[in-house]
Amino acid sequence: MIRTPNSVSLKRLLPTASFVGCADIAVTDAVEHHEACTPGCLFAAISGGRTDGLTLAPLAVQRGAAAVLTHRPLADLDVPQCIVTDVRAAFSEITHALEGYPTRRLGVVGITGTNGKSTVAWLVRAILEANGRQSGLLGTIEYSDGRNVTGSTLTTPDSRSFSHWLGTMVRNRTRFAAVELSSHALDQGRVAGTLLDCAVVTNITRDHFDYHGDFAAYRTAKAKIIELLKRSGSLILNADDAGSASLAEHAGPHAQIRTFSIDGGADVTGTILEESHNGTHFRITAGTRSVDVFSPLVGRHNVSNSLAATAAALHFDLSLTQVAAGLESVDVVPGRLERIECGQPFPVFVDYAHTDDALRHALASLRPITTGRLICVFGAGGDRDRNKRPLMGQAATAADVIVVTSDNPRSEDPSDIIHEIVTGIGNDHPCTITEPDREQAIGRALDMAVAGDTVLIAGKGHETSQTIGTREIPFDDRVVSRRQLTRSRIEQREQDISVRTGS
Image 1 (cartoon, rainbow, N blue to C red):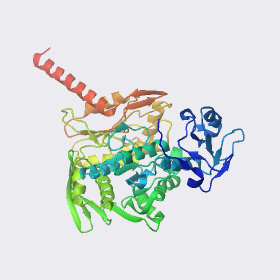
Image 2 (cartoon, helix red, strand yellow):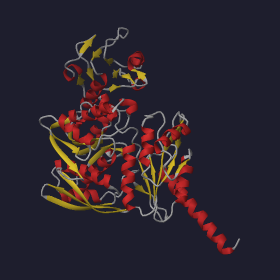
Image 3 (spheres, rainbow, N blue to C red):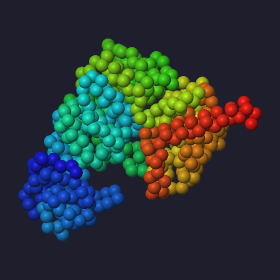
């Protein structure tokens, strides 16, 4: 149970609010789910999504809620009510106030973008901690308060959990935080009240159109990260990405814009010196200073992610030498071009790429370091944006062998999803295989690979389950890949023995 000792005056915190049945409400605990109500708490009646908080307000009062936060008066409730225009944003402000406004006492880097958020957050934390600065992280892979770590459930937690994790960081004497901010969280006001020292926008391409509708709305949601910047905070933009770079026009008068680029012409630039399956050697330049880095992370896009993290670290007055030490300390970002080693004669990578842009970048990163065939296994999620499925297929044509399979089909028929992906591949691709069973698909890709080939298994990355219908089935691409590689080696050894013995 999340509780804080603070008491918050809603009249003082929300000066434009009106009140029914009282002149003010003093809040010591606030929740948005009626099941979580305890005696004396404030219930936020948030409408939208799958539930309507207004209809659940009576149940919340029955469970002990002493007051309700709502966008309109509820005549059938005999408890004090606070009326606001945006309940979700007001609720987020309240949760931050209950935690004592933790982001005022933390150095916070907020990261948004279609791709790269998790890697940039991971690298920012690594740089800070390599230089003695205890840091927390909230993102797609895990939540950490600087001491304790747990697996994440959402890229950006709900408002109450988000502010509580930040408050715990302060209580643990954690000094910094790297937080991923999804377009959903920004659009819904779930992180209102958060103050950022740095706002990083990795890129803005295409994703979540099932929610946002179109690119303009998606970009508008991403741009809301700028509203969270502290006075004189740094807005860090990717000069190589038109969507990210376009947000410069939204920067306030006090924001410091810092750009990064591999192509040049930015505040922080990167020059790739050498690439291999084992990592990337590149040079970072900022002004007149430069440093050479060898990162175990593979690919051009990870150089870009490293530059974004560098720009954030420079805001906190770290040197490029200190930055390099942090970047070189990261052996792997879970599920982000993560190498799978089982003694096989070809490299295998598992990556989270689940958008056409991310898949295109992952394949482009592996092509220069592949002497043989590039084999790609991927799918697309069910009950999500259908229009991106043929785009995923089109992106996959950069591979020599394509294996299309399932990736969280949810309530849809996997074969229907696969068919829509294949329409983007077209009939001219030399080798396209469809296999709805994801484990079988991975096995087929690994069985056909030989020395010189590279296998990319994309879409799920660090995820440890597959959603089929209403069932959540344990499934980890990394575990499955190791199992299939081990099976293949055993079968090959048995065949070799059979040949030698003539049996």
